[in-house]
Amino acid sequence: MNILILGAGGREHTLAWKLKQSPKLDQLYVAPGNAGTASIAENLSIGVNDFEAIKKAVISNNINMVVVGPEDPLVNGIHDFFLNDSEIQHIPVIGPQKAAATLEGSKDFAKEFMIRHNIPTAAYQSFTSDTLEKGFAFLETLKPPYVLKADGLAAGKGVVILNDIAEAKKELQSMLVDAKFGNASATVVIEEFLSGIELSVFVLTDGKNYKVLPTAKDYKRIGEGDTGLNTGGMGAISPVPFANKAFMDKIHERVVKPTVEGLKKDNLPYKGFIFIGLIKVGEEPKVIEYNVRLGDPETEVVLPRIQNDLVAVFEAVANQTLDQIDLRIDDRTATTVMTVAGGYPEAYDKGKEITGYDTISDSLVFHAGTTLKDGKVVTNGGRVMAITSFGENFKEALAISYRNLDKLHFDGMYYRKDLGFDLK
Image (cartoon, rainbow, N blue to C red; front, side, top):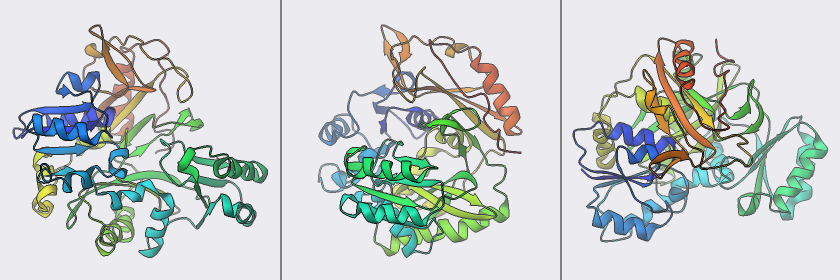
């Protein structure tokens, strides 16, 4: 098979690395890809939302399957674009159709879906600029901290948590009236703050059957001890030590099953990954959000633990025969540590030469924001490279990643040295 992956980050390099192991694979393409994917696949300089250019590349390269990495093309309807074009409608797309992708495209839509299907989540209300005063009044009924979420896609930066009521009101006005996040904050969801520890559960579904993939926990804040600004993710650990069988059974019965059944009941065709962001409140799981693709950097710890041929798994998704696949999972713990550019998640420089990555052993190196310039690998994004290692427990795995990080260098390189600080 010839396969095209859409995307340019660490998630896409990990997908490429995993698919490359399959004897069923012939040619692998990534659009637009990065320096890491360039070493194992052919990069195509096509944007993930340039559907016409993607169609041309699919036809000219005789592509047999498209795997969608990021959320944007899914929310914009890439799967529907294929289904509605007679020349390419026979080519399977791994990723949900547009209507189902609204689970990530609109937080209000996702909350309504959860309420409709009795999936546990935080109490909430949604507001627009016309109902700003009602939003202020609702904030006054809540206890701090106050959680405000831009309804639409805001590149992972649309969630604000504030302790002061006056600041929360000012932020609500900024989002709704001043369009702080553009169209993404034309509607704002305000919800109760849930106190607990977070984890991610990944589900792969073919629209009828589903498989629960390994759990993971990522670390979003830039600073150690989970302080500072939110990022796209500073590292991840899989499995999550506190997600024991009893807790996972609750997640399965109360969240996973009703989510997959809810998609069927609501006639939302879904072939792809469901990322369920959860929080453990006491001993109870509650859903924070849905994403309609694999998370990043969770992909860098989840996929290396899956021992199956991923091409065969994706074929089963396309053919709705996922029930015939027996998932095999590595029992060891995987951890990944993300290196980022100095200044990230605010302003940062690009084009810094990266050295030492080719001397790393006992770990997997996944490129995120990298590109090739004059034959050298240089930085090309805020999150630059992820170092994934295995161990009998997360401390052992992290120790290997940190040891290898000493070999890696680029100007301004930063990473968190305290991953797993909140786990036992």
